Image (cartoon, rainbow, N blue to C red; front, side):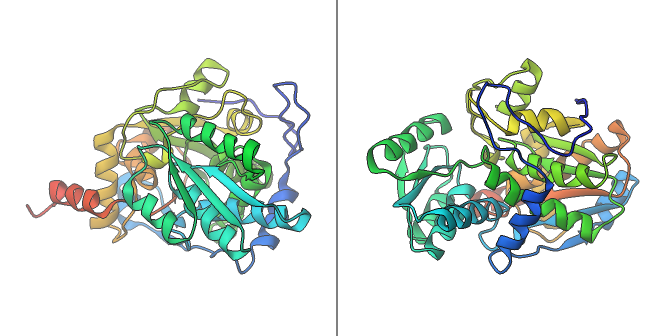
Length: 347
């Protein structure tokens, strides 16, 4: 999917008639300053196996090594830090597919804040347990992210908690954008970046950082075939509600919000291509990351490798070096073991 470019480095997301904050590169630099000592600068590693397969140099941005096991800590920590700097809230509440909730719980604990995380029954038990271990209150509501979001809104209305969205929030986007700055610093000649695509907070932040530095860098959103709301919304030209279905890339599930204020416009603005991968391809990506890269990753983090193994790099003629953002490691280990058994190259 190709998108038109505006010359400005500042994105004005006002499609829905709402006065919104302008988001620009300076917000990402400010977020990086805020996050010093709160998040890790994660490694960038060269992948000989994927480079040979792709025919161009391929590097892995290992955000799976982040403190809470995913990139979400960047956005949550930046948003909560700025929230507390303005006025300490009674507590925070979030709807999550798992990793955002874990990040919010961790960041809130640093400030002694109450945190309530609302999740659907589709969230894997290992992610629910990890959030509880960080001291957050957990509410399992319904079978979709939208139902969990409705419960979170009730806590805002009735208990006076502050909502911290998982992606459609300027401070969250800016926090995720610090990952883009690291990519530029670690691989200045990067040609293309493949980013897991769901609600769009990670993609928007990274793409804003990359294209502000050099507009020729290709930004590719990679997602699962089953139930990707952002992909369907891009095709429709407006935010859509999509039925959620079980997927190995559970972190990419959920809607983008019919009243999406930032990420839909930003993804539409900055996305050069979207690539869809099947469940079997995601499983192959998880297995590859273990057998060849010696990394344990969750399904959402394996979609870049899956797309490359499906031939997306050659099909799209992406310029190298290519970076795959490996977004998290919080997979259910029993499921991971089963995938490895089914893919064991020696069996």
